Structure formats: structure tokens, C-alpha cells
Amino acid sequence: MTEELLSLPVPSVPDGQKGVAWLRANVVRFSNGAEHARRRALTAELVENVTSLDELARALKLPGSLGDIAVIAPCYQPHEPITDEADAAVERLASSHDEETAARIGLLVQAWAATHALAKNLEAGSSAAPVPITRRAAQDGVIEVSLENHPFGHGAHACPGRDLGIRLAKNMAFRAMHHQDEPLVLPNAWDYTSAAALHAAGFKAIGTTSLGVAAAHGIPDGMGLAGEQAIALAKLLRDLPCPITVDFESGFGLDVAELVANLDAAGVNLEDGRPHGLASAEEQARLISKVKERAPGVFLNARIDTHWHGTAVEETEERAKRYVDAGADGIFVPGLTEPRDIEKLAHLAPLNVLAQQRSPKELGNLGVKRISTGSLLFRAALQHTVATARAVRDGGVPEAFSYEEVQALI
Image 1 (tube, rainbow, N blue to C red):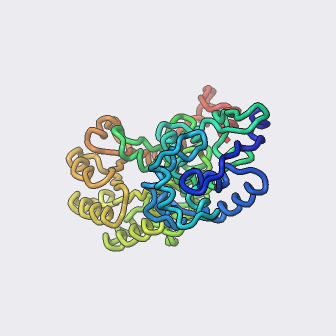
Image 2: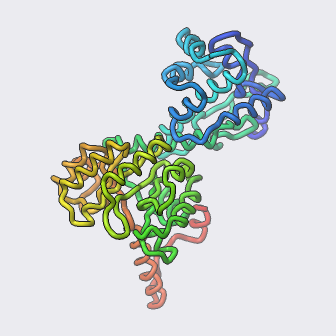
Image 3: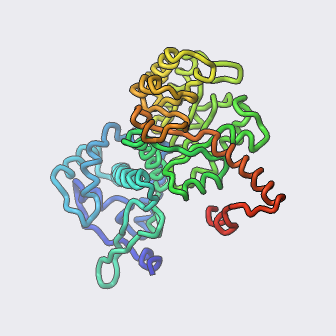
């Protein structure tokens, strides 16, 4: 029945010469038929591959407009009352009263509303659509249709900016997860099914593990040789209903900035370790700056490998400061376990450490904002695989997911 209801036309809106009424009357969202098709094509042309709402505003020739957009958004839907402030905000943004201008403003309003709602859901671990109901025009008048069990952008009026909205929402939610009271526990997957299983187990965001990805393909880790495999996995994971962050080692010798901007990942790890030592702090800061300039909405976690190389915490702190100044959103120091060292670095930016003997609560009290499992899950799975095979050989009854459970993940 819901499918039939969604095929009904959207309710008509009164014509308007200015303000929110003019905006409603000229956007794709509240139109039908040939008018809808024309406006939809116009709106689709405006959708850019961007990583943040600020970037989208600039692409739509509406820089610095998000304050006005936030005022318009609560009044945008026809069943909501229009405020004088919202009318004034529309007029400030409307350089002319034509369909293209309406499309640009309308797209940004809908992107703002959808991404904030989606991001809030994702932060809570929910993949629910941003709008719980929609309205359709039936013979007996306007009816409300529940979208509770339908994906975002469903139906004849599917949002042309659906993919972009989801991407921006994942970026926003992932960033917010690093600024909560409790640390984000981030498990690291090595293939699609391990990531899907971790999401199904309730983890709100998933990372990838460079060792797991490389080793699964018979490639040594840390040598910059598994770039093709890391990118292929990132592309597979983009449709999971949660934020994904990708371990890109030191960049695999690729154009990392362009890659990150086009990969649909909410986060990326970039390390200053190189196959035969450490990059200079200046070189790594330049790389970080380039990536953040091209993809400002993607959370860049700057991994500092000084502890692996036995360097004093003072150099780690100096590198951390340089990387944060270059635009890094967080810092990751694998091997960091001393409470005093953790506290010393935690005030610089959201601090990521590897899982260790201390509980998430204990690490959170030291200032840690993110706890990664790194290669632990892959190594544990490998060990369990061998143990299971031995159990079969020796007559044991090993525990495992059922065939149906694995199929359900896919």
C-alpha cells in the first residue's frame, strides 16, 4: 500500500512572488509532472562532489549562507508556518527570482535539513531516513505516508541529492563521534563481510586495517604496495549505512588529495611512517594540508609513528602540533600507553590510541577520544580460523556464524 501512496502526486503549493512562498512554488520538491521533470534535471546538474555543506554552499554560488539556510529550513515544508525571518533570509539569498536560483537555494535547504537529521540518526547508531513521513495528494485530501521502513530518497520524488546528502551526513556524524563524552570504539575490518558484521553488531563507525587488507591479498604491510586493494575495499564499503574511515598508510604514492575527495569515505588515516623510516614533519604537514584543502569535510586522522621508532614523546608532540596546524582533525599515536604521555597529547586534538589493557572509560578519563582495534581483529580471526580447523580435525564442535547469518549480512 505504501508504494501505491508514494506514487500519488505531492500536494500543490500556492504561488508566491517572494520569500519562502516563492521558494516553495519554484523548487522540484513540491512540483509534479513535466514541471517536476524539468526542475529535477536542473537540480541534478547542481549536485557537486563535495565533502561538506560549506563546500556545497560555495559550489551553489551561496558562500557564507548556511546561517540563512538554517533559518529557512524549519519553514520550508508547506505544512510549516512561514516566519518573517525566513522570508527575509530567502530574499537575501535570491539574486533573482528564477527557477535556477530557487533550485540552488532549495537544494541547499534540503541538504542542510537532511544531513543534520541523518547525522543525528547515525550518531545514535540508526540508519533511519531523515524524514519519517511524507505527504501526498489523494482524492480525499492530503494524506501522510510513513517512511519508517523505507530508505532515504525512496519513491517517485526521490531526492536527486540523495547520495550527496548521505555522504555529507556520514562526514558530519563521524566528526561528531570524536567530540563525545565517551571515546569512539572503532573496529577495523579487512573485507566487506567483516565490516558488515561489525556494523550489524552495533558499532557506529568502521575503519579498515592496512595489515588485514594487505595480508589477505598476500602483500606485506607498510610497504606501500596494497593501494589498489585498499581503494577497492573502500569502494565496496561506501554503501554500508555507517561512516567508514580508510587506512591509506602513507598514501601509496598516489594523489591522495584527489583520491580522498572522490572516495565517499568519512575519514582517512595518513601516517608519517615510510617503508624505510619516518617522513620529515614538513613533508607530512604538506601532504595533510593538501588533502584537507581538497576534501575539508573528511576527517583526517594523522598517524604519528614515532613510538614505533622509539622516538621521545617530545618529538611526537611537536609533530602532532605541526599536523594539527596543517589541518589534521585528529592524531593517532600507535604504541602510546603511558598515562602521562596520553594526557600530554590529548589536549592537542581528538586523540586516537590502539586498544589496550585499559577500558574505554579509563582511556576516556585520560582524554582519549577514539580507540582503534588496528590489526587485532584480523589477527584474532586468523587464529580462530586455525583453531576451528584443528577442532574439526580433532573432533570438536566449533562455534561459527550460520550460513544464513552470513548471507543476511550481504
